[in-house]
Image (tube, rainbow, N blue to C red; front, side, top):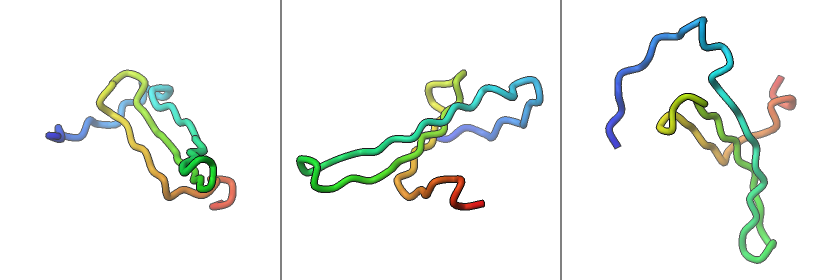
Length: 60
């Protein structure tokens, strides 16, 4: 997938990012992991998902 040039930070779009957390269970419930998704609400192509997260509160 081609990656376009970075967009400059725009102070008029402070609410454009959304985040969601997921608990994903596999192997009939024997294994599970947590994932974090960060998405630009204005673009279907701008998102990031990670399965290597810890609760953000625990990182402070």
